[in-house]
Amino acid sequence: MHAMEWDDLKVFLAAVRTGSYTAAGRLLGINRTTVGRRIDALENALGVSLFQYTPNGPAPTREGQELLTTASLIESEIDTLLARMKLPGEAPETIRIASSGGLASEFMAELARFQRQEPRAVIELLSENDPLDSVTQRRADLAIALVRVPPVRLTGVQVATLSQAPYARRDGGDDRVLGWGHEIQTAVPGQWTVANPAGETAEEAGVPRFNSWQQLKQAVLAGIGQASLWCFAADAEPDLHRLAEPDPRHDYPLWLLHRTKSPPGPALRKLIVFLEQALRERIGRASCRERVCWIV
Image (cartoon, rainbow, N blue to C red; front, top):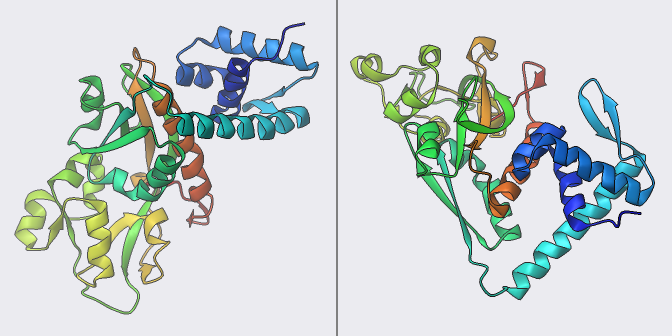
């Protein structure tokens, strides 16, 4: 009988967390066949079936759910032990995250939680006009980006679909519509510029312009004006209220992307899995248009 190995458990955890053998393989830098072989070996070692196959992909069986709980605890204990031991020769791993329009700053709480869990990971945030190009050119390791179809040179996971709506301060404030600065304008698809004045339109209107969504949200909170904001972020602010329902034409997918031909290192793999789970949990508590509002 094949003995259960930690590497097999890591493959199992990746398969559960990503929802497919193919996605797990991309995350771990191995092919789908190897993922399936590792899962088969684990099932043979335990004498149980760990997955049932559904139209939406493999889902853990009852035994799989039990193993997930145990394997997650083992993973946490191993990570804690390695961090305490500070093994010689194991240098910190820097993860450079590229985004535009201050997109990554919306995830600061999640990144801080990851940093506490993974003290050897060093997070560096880069503000880039084109985060996809930054990853391709190796200036960054991970892109947090709005893109309908990722280029073939990059791979990763779609975390969510973002919705936006117009917001104002609940107790009043200026009713002028605030403008997007250059960084936000280049970060979003062209049709989104109808939501907020941008470029020459904003300049001619004489409205204040902001280069990040955090700045824009803070401006609305300060009563400087109104603006279209991400629903997940604005709905969490008790001092803001929504002026209209989101327009689905302005929805856009949010991706975590890395280089296809360069499998992510251990820390980056953990970060991708962590962010995918953490953001989906956070998203599950937000609502737009009486449906889940996947967020930035």
